[in-house]
Amino acid sequence: MKKKFKLTSSLINFLIHVEGYTLAEIGRVFNLSRERIRQIKNKTTEKD
Image 1 (cartoon, rainbow, N blue to C red):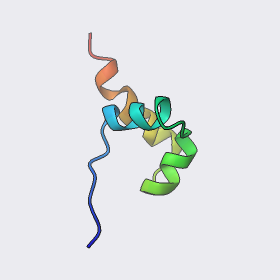
Image 2 (tube, one colour):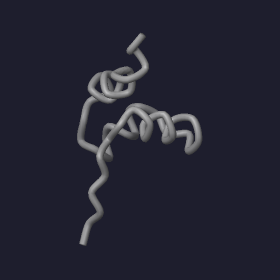
Image 3 (cartoon, rainbow, N blue to C red):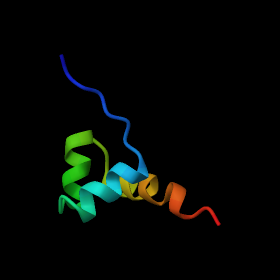
Image 4 (cartoon, rainbow, N blue to C red):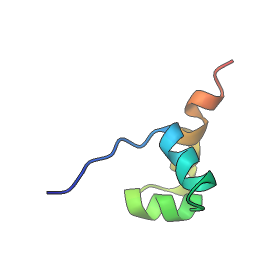
């Protein structure tokens, strides 16, 4: 049984900064474009 993960900005930040993945690598795993990954990543960080 496959585990399902919700792709959040926190998970993206973890994958980039701790695990060292690029936006393109994350996009390939989740079948999303780099731009879409960037939008999700910036979703909560732009709230001021």
